[in-house]
Image: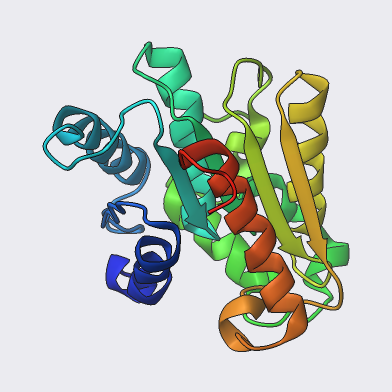
Length: 230
């Protein structure tokens, strides 16, 4: 499930309110297209954007990679891949309640909790579909398949990670933020109180959603716009 058009309202808001040019890429979906199909598609989209930045009126030195949920995991993986491949790195990465670590799917204590919108049974199916086999049988994963398993997080771009404190991904997201900071990567971690997965889309007008989006916007302004006070 999922399609780039689902994020048109958010992308339009970034363009309208922050003056950003947004490229939103569709990628092939598992289980029909397991790893590395999705990250390959994202990588090609990144290269395309860099090649066409000038004609789009974009400064190639001020482009962020962003994503939410599964797309947030792909955004994190893409940043690792650009670093490892010697391709121009993004100026920043914005990870919105990202899906980062398949090992969460094996935790029975989390499976017992009925997380709103995305529970650990869904999580196990999702990771198994993406990696091509049940997560219980996986001991190691290829590069860029599971961002949370990466042992070297140095030289990654400044990062914003936001997640609700009732989200299944809370612990893996916080662990990733801590690991980035330990690797001397600038990282802002935002934990939204009493908030489940995708809460900002469910209750767009709530104060917790507005504060969450404001923090993300401030991060993008600092790293992408000519005038951070925009």
